[in-house]
Image (cartoon, rainbow, N blue to C red; front, side, top):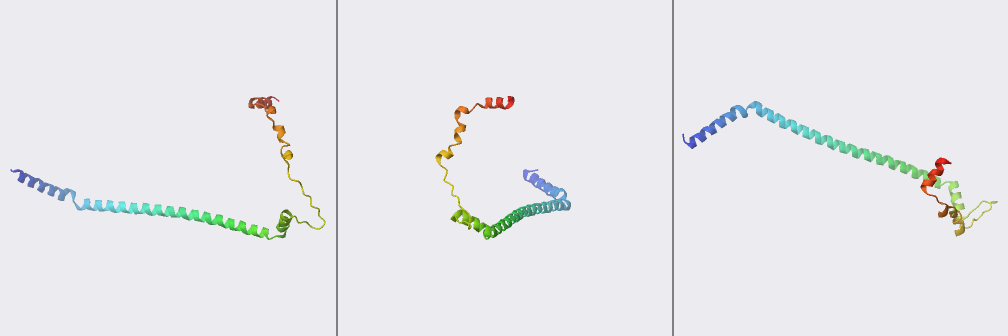
Amino acid sequence: MSILERLKTQLRRLRYYSKKDIFTLTNIFTVVALVFAAACIYSTITATTRNWQLEQKLANLRLEEARLKVEVETLELEQQYYATAEYQEIMARSKQGKMLPGETMVVMPKNTASAKNKYQEFDSPSTKRSNFEEWLDFLFS
């Protein structure tokens, strides 16, 4: 036999083997079913992921909406308070120096440097003790 005839025989055997053992109806159906199952699983996973992301976005938007509602309610209450006579009287007294008839206004002087430094002399460095001495004093006195 020549090489060409042997090659033809090998090709015929391979063709026969592939028709009878590999490309059977059962094997083709199994491969198609596996591909279909993989496609279904992939689409399910992508849809689930997308739905989860949208749920997270919706939850964040609802939280933001609730925060904004609370902020609006707070601003409305603040606006109502600013419209009250009590607030207007407080602001007139503090900003413009207004007073009711019969009241006496007392104007306090600004704090001077000596008044601000009055209590700093007790924290002089000569009276400071070490941390160890402080602990000893705390524990044994």
